[in-house]
Length: 140
Image (cartoon, rainbow, N blue to C red):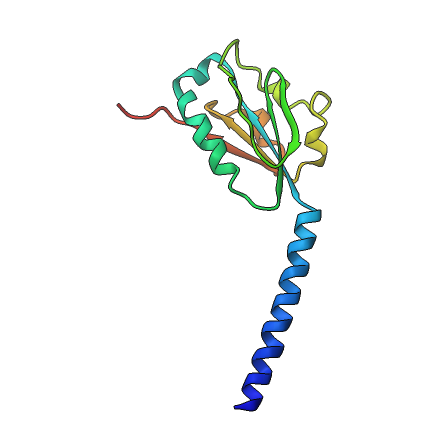
């Protein structure tokens, strides 16, 4: 019994030290996730789904988020996604939204989420870090 207790103390002590070290490492080196939201006219049909989609993405721990649209940068790297009072307007311009010169955050992002209802866009398929969140209109 004494050996078992000694084993438990060593095991849980080592587990606690390694877990704390990993937590501190992830806290000081967070992942960077860029979220690009399509704010074009065609998005009006699914616009009510965008806040819930962003909330689902934001659940990730040890992560910094940056939010952009096809028209403007909403906020730089921070721990929360702040959607603000965006509304869909103007024609779709996915090429502008995916322009690395316009949004330098793309170069340092570990993952990029593109929230859109565009179907089969070739511009969206070139980078493997991009995760396309395809929004569909809700059935009545």
